[in-house]
Length: 304
Image: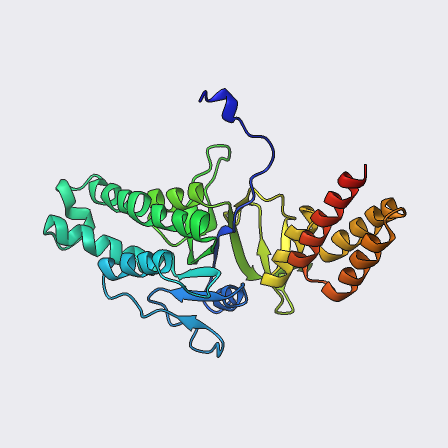
């Protein structure tokens, strides 16, 4: 079979693969716990205050970390979202494994230095961890949410005459770059801050609102391939709602589309009556509404 005969078109929809990073206590773990049937894996204790959070045992070493990913891929379970909490803590397990393999105390000592140890760490992330996450996402159908802490580092912008401070992932630079390239969105979680001038001085103030920034600015790193607005409330429900609206999967959009299509079934009163009953029964469940929409489309096609 030729490759040209296998060409596909259109958007390929997969479960979410995102990073949410920010300072301690801003609400990253609560965001992850609100995702669909979430289970946490990591060495953090940020979910201790969340009564509904499901957690795998904290991995004591790199092997246990991989074992947890393999069990999620191979065993039957109810979970729909994996939350890694957090990337910077888990990176220490990967570094420790590299140090054990090379019989050194610090990753900087591997191969005499010059970033060779970090290169081996990144290879493990890419070849052994990310490959497993891809399996969970593409085969098992799980969302992947990677939580991480932020760090403020001096950024050397080649387009500017002076350096400035910037919130970035709390990971080694090359490892952070690997994560940014891997995911569909890097979302910076922080408190909403406003600045106003008083007496000739700029003062910051805010009301405690927590938000997600989806696009990079001089003060923080962020990106998304999902066409998200620049700023969102720090809420999984709001994140899902915005994406559903953009993809035409929001319940209101689906209901309006089905109601419009039902008008084409005037000559099929029994089919139309059944579809209208199902529309009322399904309420705002987007999964059931999408199934109903497809059935109505099929009925229209059969009647044509």
